[in-house]
Length: 322
Image (cartoon, rainbow, N blue to C red; front, side):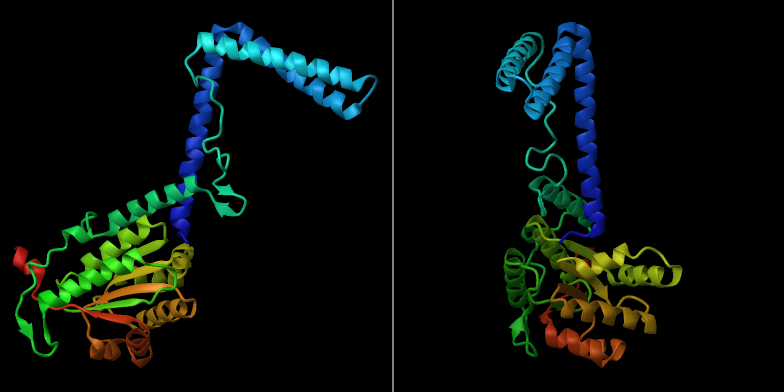
């Protein structure tokens, strides 16, 4: 399910393209009438013939069958003359007045199902939105380097950072490739600069490319949106997006100023999405004890008990790159 913002932008683009195509057709038609007056006469006569044909079929007065046959023959003759004139005087497709999409006639829907043309526009708009929010906009699993993680052994985890991060990378690739609405939520936990944001962004881009609705936000931006709606009585479309999207990614939980309002908002997000079987990915620098101390036992138990916890080890990558 795409967010309201993404869907509105995609619909606006579809309507804009339909309007552009119509404007081109009308400009070409005016040019054609000016250069070939016979074309205007043919179109006028065809409209008249069509109305007469419909009337003869509906009224059935006199010898209706003969009149209908006569009008149909006249209509075929005029159509043939029109086609010949267009082929002779203008490039192919010069007066193409077909809808912007042949499947949905430019409405964006085939019955109650979203048309593939609108789906493609939604994916494009969501990719643009994600690229604007992500740290570089160029994140991809192929750019994730394991060389920056030390190969030394961590006794408390019974593995090396590089081995663990290889497993995490493989898991994230598989998770993104097999994502479906309602798949188990994830909690990325580890110190600053270990690749949590990067792998979150990789998952976001892959899931988006597969046609699912993704909202990527920082914890600070999420709680700011809740405060705006709560205290300034702003429109709640953004909150609806957080609630309804297929995958909500909350980056940097724990870096915000934590207040009672923030705790209540986080509980609402986590609990409502769990109840609705919506998938969430949260990255945080906090460990399990820190989560409970900061947000309370109710939230911590939901995150630790209902989410799959993915631990990150190593040295701060950002410091290595400076």
